[in-house]
Amino acid sequence: MGSEASRDAALAGKITTPVLLLGIGLILLGALCIYAPLESGMAVGVLAGIFLVISGLLRTSLFWVAPSWGSAFLRLALGILTIIAGELAVGTLVGIKLIMDGIALIAVAGSCSSPDSISSLSCWSSLHSWSADW
Image (cartoon, rainbow, N blue to C red; front, side):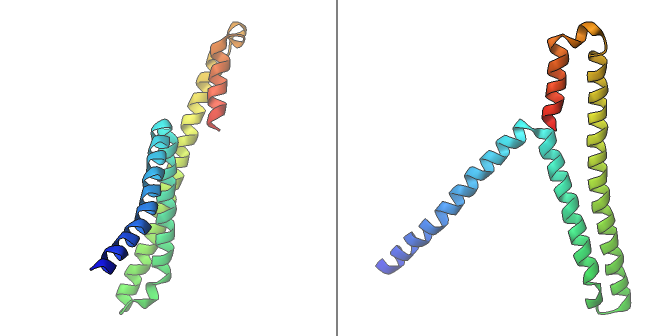
């Protein structure tokens, strides 16, 4: 009975540290996502697209294991469609990001267009906040 208790205590000690570190890491990542929601959303979307591409490549590369030709063709087609879906996800999200940056730059250029506004604090703070995103 005593050896089981000591074994359980040792196992609990081995499990507690990684779980504690994982909890701290998740809290930090959550705080980072709250601090920069657009960037974290973009990162999650791009990662999802990358995972779709990898999944499609693996699915496509294993089509030959199928028991029949019809099943192999279906696996190949699904793999190719998964790759296309991943590429579309990444391309769409990057395109949206570029459009949003373009709109922001046009707005900043409009606010800094007159000679009086160039010396104003709002023009420089707009330029600084946009350049900090890059």
